Image 1 (tube, rainbow, N blue to C red):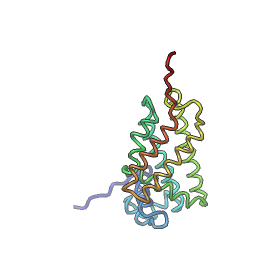
Image 2: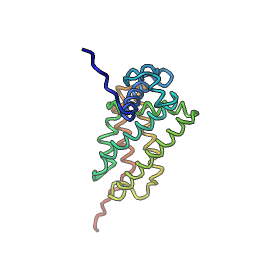
Image 3: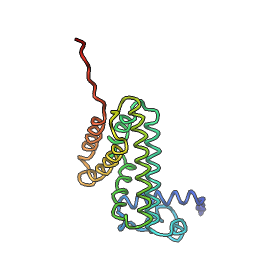
Image 4: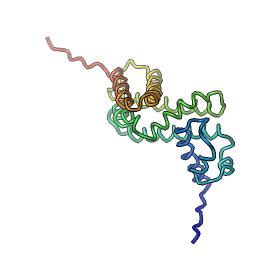
Amino acid sequence: MVMERTRLSAADRRTAILAAAQREFAIRGYHGAATANIARGAGCSEPMLYKHFPSKQALFAAVLEEAGARMGERVGRIVDDAENPVEAWIEHVATRATRDPEIIELMRLRMLAVSLADVPEVRAAIAANTAAMRERMVSILARARDSGHVRDDVDLEAAAWLWFGFTLAGGFAHAVDPDAAAGNCALMARTFATLLQPERCEIEES
């Protein structure tokens, strides 16, 4: 008996292509990634892939945007109800950065994107991804400051850039030495959080 192939809606097909492309780009890099492999992973033909994305560059840019947005939603779910959002981020994201496949793939995509910054679509995706991440970081840090977990004198925009730098450092750490990266990333995150903490001075009564 011949099984009929399920026809996906345009939105579902696009989602399948992006998922397959994210894996392919993360594993093989931009130049090593093959659109034939991506189409096969998405269960469609290459012509169908190009109906959704006009070029490999446009596909990569869309993957970067989608992965960044998805991670933003994930971080939001973790920190939104936390008493100390910075601590929640460290516990659930930073310390798992080099063991969680989704986080690892996003870190690799961001490193790849830098080498493609001269491509207009990719540069726009980098700018949007970075701006959204910094905005999210500033919001988290502001909440932590308001609840007394971050110093009042911290420039939140500057701290957000440092936080963004941590994510890039995590990607490099994993690329160079995956076995040691988990401990290094956790240490970097803890150090960053410590630098933000208010001083706890007890004044002895005379």
